[in-house]
Length: 95
Image (cartoon, rainbow, N blue to C red; front, side):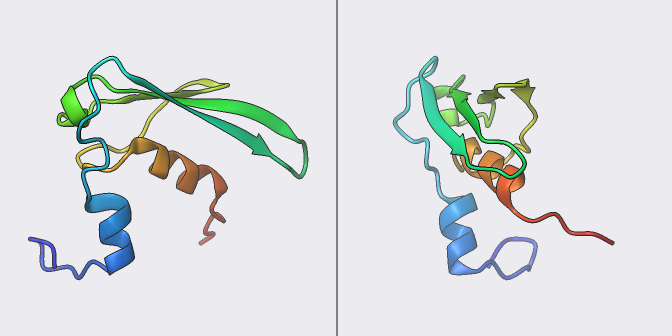
C-alpha cells in the first residue's frame, strides 16, 4: 500500500515503484532500438535515456526519440523508458 492509502497492485509496484536505475552512473546513455510495425507506417527509432544523477536518484533522466526531447513524469524510481513505451503504445482512452 502507498502512503496515500491507494492500493498498488504487485505489477504496478514492479513497474513503477522499484528503483530500476540503481547502480547506473551519471552520464550513462541507455539506448532502446524500436521498430514500430504500423499502421499507418513502419518506423524505426531509438529511444535514448540519459541518466543525469547517480541511479537516477533525482528522477532527472532525459528521454529523447526521433522527435527530440520527450517529457516524462518524474518523481518515481522507475526507468523512464517504461513510461515512454507505455504512453506511446497503449490505447488512448476517450471521454
